[in-house]
Length: 435
Image 1: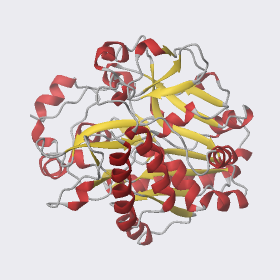
Image 2: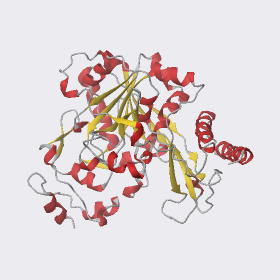
Image 3: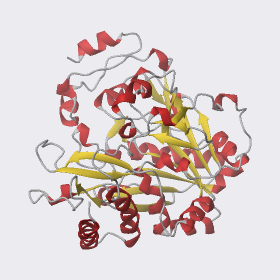
Image 4: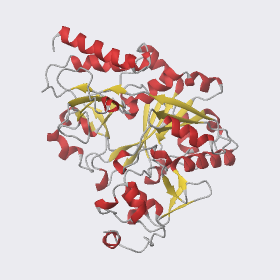
């Protein structure tokens, strides 16, 4: 791309973001990646990939199972919980915030998150605040829902701004007059750090004695406050800590932690960064046994220091996703979506840690298969509203519902209110019931 074309495309992108009233902070962050993208040599440049030959697998890390129960709960006065709450769950046919989907006992994700944190605060006589990172698609409904429900939690909001999709050849902002909303996309959950920084909430938290933030996905009900893990984070003086779980055959496509060859630097290799020739290695669960749960801990002063050092930019590794401007029309304009992953902050923090956790720290709902499992008798709530497996989770059936159950409206209409017991039934028997 010539310099003149590059500058023209860049100006068009800036103007489009300004017209959409996107903040200067988000524009500057986007332009950092735009410059990297524009200066790539050619469309055949493979710099987006993290090749197997460039990395070393990580296969030995400390385990939460080595901890003794900690009496050190003072750390709970120094932590805030942040939930990523920008998703719609479109793969399940949802049109509103995914966190407002009813999960179990007529409770939504958001209901359960609030009850979990309220119960923790009551048990430990703490006052852990909740921060929700909303998006354009979830902000209004989430705030309205919480306003209609009584809670004694201290709840704050930050707002994840969208960014323009870029034409794959010219890097000009994508155009789709049929539905202009499709011209924009979220920047990936790596934007949480700049969003925190630019919101001013970090100073607010520090002034109230908060030093750490625990970040996780709103659709992961296993990501609860753990005094033991927080004490481990504090006692080791980490700036950043990532919870990892051991892979099963169902997890082969998830991002995994690796080291750069000839260094001790850690990073996340996301699925989009795996070269097609390396897929057999990336999906080998013996070679790469751990994956990122997206349960992360960050020290506030360390985060502020890094962003200040880079003049308001956080240079996370870029993920370049090639899509169509209309995801449901493969013949529509080819576009690039620039994304970052929050786990990749481990690559730029000086004092980072990894911790192997049990699978009960990861209870996500990515499909109606997961939803059916949670609504069954294989899970129940304990007194703290934690989801507890009623049998050994290794014996859980592998549910593969017929495609007619894929969308939530069809699922709700077809699944009986009284789900049969799954405790003594095989995967094949369950899947036959729901054909």
